[in-house]
Length: 194
Image (cartoon, rainbow, N blue to C red; front, side, top):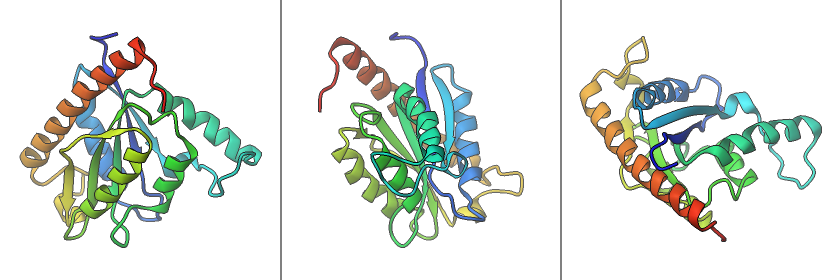
């Protein structure tokens, strides 16, 4: 439906012990949830535990995880990937989640919220843009990026400069809502075939 909220899946890409991703994702999802034009579903890859080995016949536990995540991704009109930067790229757990799915990404917009050291995770985002292009997804231009991320949040998990990152989040969400609605209408009118 044209006026219904865009179903936004926020994917927490890091599964590393001691990770900072949930802090960033919780803040972003909270911002998105305040909007009437967005419905948020947070998918934390540390909680869903997708199988690490790609196979046409995953083991029972892995098959259950895939059965739980696949429909959530398919139901999404748009995605936000929350990613750190590990060694100039994104985490293996995120690549694994991307590679287990294909049609779920197609003809849908993807935005990025990145965090890290001096680069703020932007090198990871540039790698992800190429991956999502291969999957027939469209990445939106603007991102939210936290340089020196842990120093950018207070102990309660709120940004120390809420105005700047709040404005960036609004811009990203505005773009995702536009693309999400446009792509949803286009898919309804004419199903996408890769």
